[in-house]
Image (tube, rainbow, N blue to C red; front, side, top):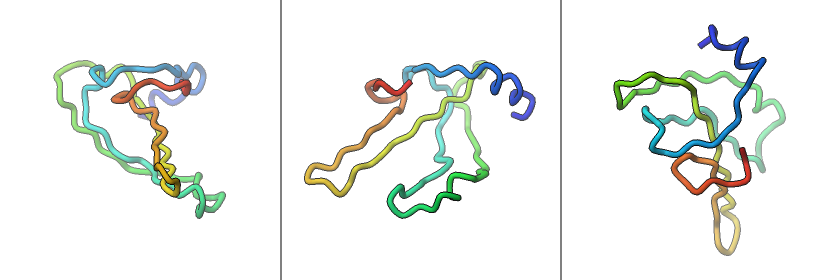
Length: 90
């Protein structure tokens, strides 16, 4: 993906998409415990592999995050996943 790096840094596109637009499986790139983490934990590299489920052109990589609030009376997850209702995070 290094061939895309310069253009993506110059003109990043931040948008929403629906789950039916995703043509591959997904994989977790990083899991952080925001309570226990160290500042340096955000400096990382991660190998990943995707399997495409459709014979189509890939136009983008979609990234999202989930934040679990587990230590509450009613635990809740803030998600920006394309498989869930869109939030204000864009």
